[in-house]
Amino acid sequence: MKIKIRTGFGYDVHQLQEGLDFWLGGIKIPHTHGALGHSDADVLIHVICDALLGAANMRDIGFHFSDKDPQYKGIDSKILLKEVMHLLSREGYEIGNIDSTICLQEPKVNPHIPDMKACLAKVMGIPEHDISIKATTTEHLGFVGKKEGVAAFATVLIVKQ
Ligand SMILES: [Zn+2]
Image (cartoon, rainbow, N blue to C red):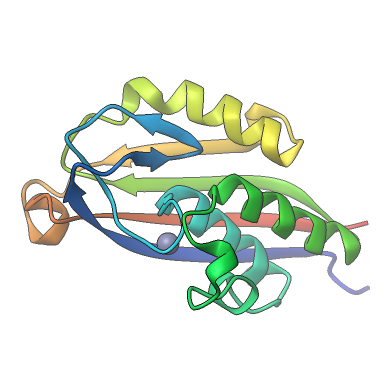
């Protein structure tokens, strides 16, 4: 019998810069710095998109939404996530679950996780229970610890109907 469950993984990094809006998990986090990128630089949404596309073996977020394409300049990453959901559902895939980790020295992410989960569940049309978001610092080590950037990881399970 052919296995109809597939797993995917995503990893992404964005630089932090003073004075930018900080979009994370679909919501705006109050902070002095924000993530730099061609889109709104929402690192959590980007890793979820990459994990979903990887699970379906459909390349990656940069392949579908080029950072050279002016139509994606400053775009809300929730739009990209919705499009990725369309790409997967067209191939008959449904989401089993998502697990993710945000690596950020400051500000504290934990108080915002319920809002992120609610937002992403709505965008993706899946139960909040199927989206796990965790947060960690890197104990002041490396570019995350030095507050130069934000990183995230995600794994997903998708099921072919
Ligand atoms: Zn990104």
